[in-house]
Length: 63
Image 1 (cartoon, rainbow, N blue to C red):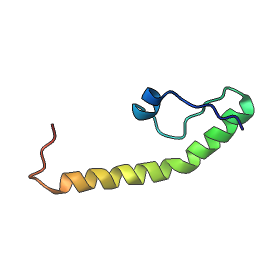
Image 2 (image 1 turned 180 degrees about the horizontal axis):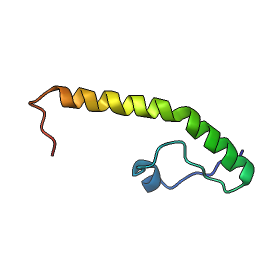
Image 3 (image 1 turned 45 degrees about the vertical axis):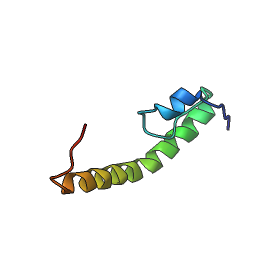
């Protein structure tokens, strides 16, 4: 497995779902794909819980 550090602005400004493949080697890409598939349900559940929390209160205002 290959690991390369991403620049700080990419780490902080990421909008893509994690994990992110950092290496183009076929073996590494395959491992990242399976990891992403495994993590997808957790991302969806966390997103739904976050939205439900903020949608619950009518007094909450978004800038």
